[in-house]
Length: 499
Picture: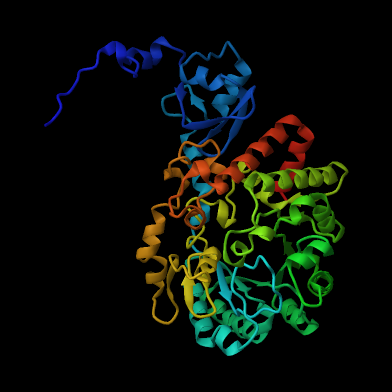
């Protein structure tokens, strides 16, 4: 039986009458798209569609939306709202083209499609890190090194990318254990790049334990960058990145120093992985990076993939614990800067570039649409192709949800534009995700279907319980709070974004 339609009395309607929206009888301004967030008990932050933000007294948003805000009430704030595209005195803003241009610029990382091509050149490794995100092996290079015909096919796909500037990154296991394949891949890519007018950046991810001068001289000749791991002082690094001789820290530091001597100081970078042990030593970790001469440090939490999930005692912690660690470490970094040293936190810098500059960032975890496929692709040692490095890690846990194809049988179009890519495209834009679409910090964040799937069981995700969301929202909020509290810190942050 169909229920009769009930007519609701006008007095009970939630929507205002038409005259409420008649600008002729109210303050004459038009609302432009923006979102807002209560930053503290006394302040709220407004963020427009192109990422400009404005701090205002609590209650300002309600006044603006209900049209109880007037120019005479606060002429300076009214001017800021106009200048920063939160309201307009014209139905169509005179600078609409400027807004459109800035929005296109923010999304211009999509213009040229995939740039980062990761080649898992070998799964062999001589370390036994308890948080390793992939299965590692120590024997039979014929079974666990990338075959030459897979290298050839991966290079072919990389050269097909519409992007003129591509990065070829070699990962492992320990990539240097298959250095002869790196030589082969670089030499072949160089000749193919000339034919296709491609600019190729080469990166080797390595723990540097087995690096030799011969390897480094080859890197110098071919302008290859080194990315290594450093988890802090020796007592942390040696526990996190175990070797039977308990000397991984000494080998890493020696490798960093020798790599700088041969390649140049700016050709060597390092990454930190935060474990349970790290949480109590924020200052010591920051000091280690600073004392070794690094100009930045990337404070990143452990990823919920691979072996990291099998050793919860050493690896698993709550998001709030990482945030406490992060804030303490960031305070230490800021203190160095207040004393006249240039030393920055890389994750904050990425977010600050999105907040304070008109330009896009290349960090795949904070992109919308997401970086998987759009910015990065992974060719595994066995010829399988994955949507991102995290997707490859899932496959090592026997979950192949994000495998796009394989180098033996799949075409370029099947991998990059196939059915799975279309499925992921439905959930890789935070502009269309519940909980993200109306979030004030949407512009500064990203979408991560693989993280959602791993931690919550589906690629769409649920923002209220998402550790990805919790972490990013608090870091973004904290950065804004710091800039508002101290103009010296704001100046430091702005300097980070231009270097």
